[in-house]
Image (cartoon, rainbow, N blue to C red):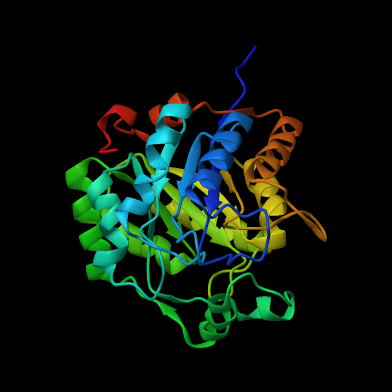
Length: 310
């Protein structure tokens, strides 16, 4: 009997750009991030994508000390790959955003493959209350917000990561980002196998229609052949629908409270583990198996947990 295909589940435990604290279940403090991250890994997430926040205000921070408040405990408590953001906040410089990955040298770091409009303000029509004063203004300001990642920024992040043996989750919000990634492949700054995280449903990037998903996959196949590992992220209500469609076509999947606060229409997810378990049901229905952390390391050519600096 042929073995079933293995799917890497990435869980984005706590974001600060996509989802301010509009759910009481979003982990913010170090202990909450530890508890939720361990539960997500136990549920089947092979990779944990991690941001840090100021516990008192929930604001994003790229202070490496904020990451050190939870990374050692997660490393000790799970075999999951720990993936650090270089996104942080669009209001930070690239040097500030890169500090955790540069100093802590994780196995994987995220990397947005271009500058883009980042329209979060439609959330103001869906949420009436916020836990912190800064959040409403953060969403309102996204009417005139550009997340900056120039060619020079991307090159800097790649060179620092390459020196440390860190590989990247290349976040591609539109087809232009795939072409930018191809540019860096051609320059030798990105080598196979590399993880392409195609992102759907955020205002400013490509939509989440099934034809959009197909278009990104066709373009990536044409540009990269078999050199890449395809993963998908559906934002908000698109999370599980995009995961189901793409997994059936060979994709890895990303879920988590950074990308969607919901588990069903009108129902908040109680934890990141809830979303991991739900996507596992989808994968099981497609006769797909979940990759272990060590299988994910092998598929992505990672350096191993023993080679990080935390």
